[in-house]
Amino acid sequence: MPIQDEAKAQRLLRAFMQFDKADWHQSNIEGCRPSEIKLLLCIKRQVKLTSHKMKVSELSRMLHVTSPTITQLLKGLEADGLIERENDPLDRRAVGVALTAKGELVTSRASEAFFASINGLIDYLGEEQSEQLAELLTKVYIYFNEREPDRSMACRHGDKEA
Image (cartoon, rainbow, N blue to C red; front, side, top):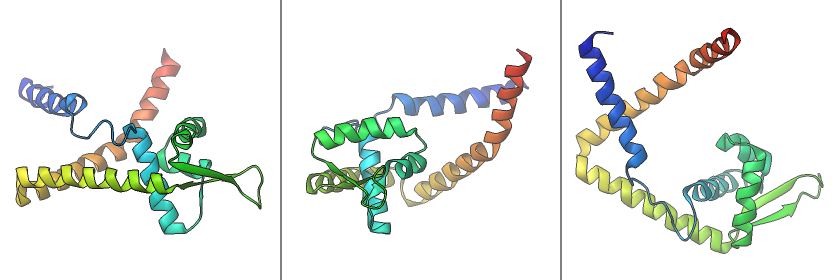
């Protein structure tokens, strides 16, 4: 790699790494961690769209995490009175999950905080740079998403050779 390209790559890498250190989202809203807020918002959105309680397997698939991870998060949210679980009358093994009134309130506050933060960024950057940032981040996502199969193949081949 030419030295100029390496310097550009290092600068881009440093910019990406800064997001790990930046406090760009609130780490705790109403006593909930970001992973819990993400799960609550997912439940709220899907129940609103489908009008049925969410199953653990559905939440797991949507959030790309294992069912045991979702189950652990749900236990804490249930203990805090943010969700309720109910056995499915048609399939006794399945459990439906919905927000309680307290869970609805927390998700509303989390949404307000998130959009206030994003609107603050738009004010800071301005309309034009905000549009450019959205376009660039979308391109970055597409780039890495399209490369994912190639990268996983390389890792698998690397494991076989090792």
